[in-house]
Amino acid sequence: MINLKNYSHRLLGTSLLLCLLAMSGCELEDFIQPEKPRKVVHYGPATTLLGGTARTWVEMVNGKPAAIGVEMSEEVLQDLPEEMGMFFLELPGQAHATGIKSVMLDWNPMGHEPAGVYTVPHFDFHFFKITEAQVKQIQPGIDEGAYKLVERGVFPSIYTFGPEPFAVPNMGVHWVDVTSPEYSPAGFSKTFIYGSHGDRVHFFEPMITLAYFNDMEANESVETPIPSLLKHEEAGYYPESYTIKHSAMKGTYSVALTDLEWRN
Image 1 (cartoon, rainbow, N blue to C red):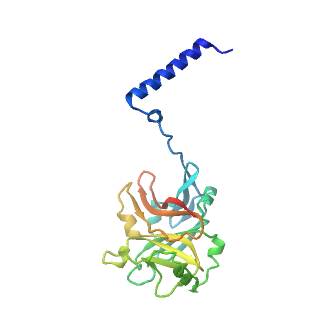
Image 2: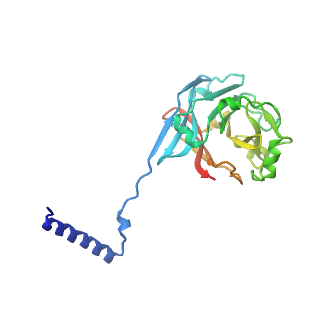
Image 3: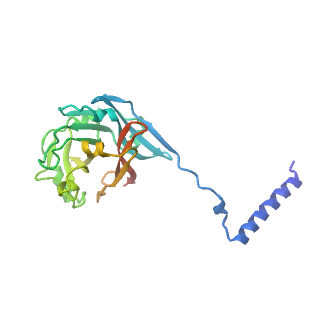
C-alpha cells in the first residue's frame, strides 16, 4: 500500500530541487558526475631474457583496448651480450581485441642497415598482426606486394622503402619515415616503422636506442605521435602514438603502442 504522506514529501522535494535549478540557471546534468573510465591492465607471462625479464601487456578502458606494450626490467639493459637476440613474448588473452597476434623483441648490439643510420646499439619492438608461425614463414627477397601498397596510396608520402622493397626474413618490408631525426644531423634515438608482407600492412615497430633508454629520467614518459595510414584496408585498432616510459619505482622500462583507435 502506498504511503501517500511519504510520497508527497518526495514529490515536494523533487519539485523544490527543479525550482532551484531553474532559478540558478543550472541544468540537472550539472549535478551528475561523469562516470570514471574503468582502466584494467592485463599482463602476459614474464619471459627471462638478456639478464632480466620482459612481458607484454594490454590496457583496456571500458572494455576496449587503449594500449599494448612490452615491459622490460632494468636488468635487461645491463651487461648486454655482443650477439643479436630475437625473442617472441607471449600475449595475454585480452590482447586478441587489439588485432595484435604476436610480439617480438630484438636486441641489435651493432645495429643494422642502412649504414650510418641505424648502426648503433638498439632494440626493435615488433607488434605483428599475424601469428608467430606466419612471421617465421617470411622469406628474404624482393616483395612485389609493396608496390601495390604504393599504388593504392596506403602510406603517407613521408614513408617509403628503399631502394627496393626487400623483405627481411622473419619480419617483412620496413617502411621508414624520411622526416625522422635519424635522416638528419640529429641522428637516431627513437623512431617508428611500419611493416608489410605481400600487399598487407602487418606490423608496427618502435625502435629505441640503448642510449635513449639509459638517458631517461626516473619516471619519465615520452609520447610521440605516429603519422597515420591514409587508408586502413583492414578494420581494426591502429595506434595514433607510441610511448616510452621509465618507471623507477617498478624498476622497468615500457614501450607501447598507445591511443589505439578503431578504423574501418
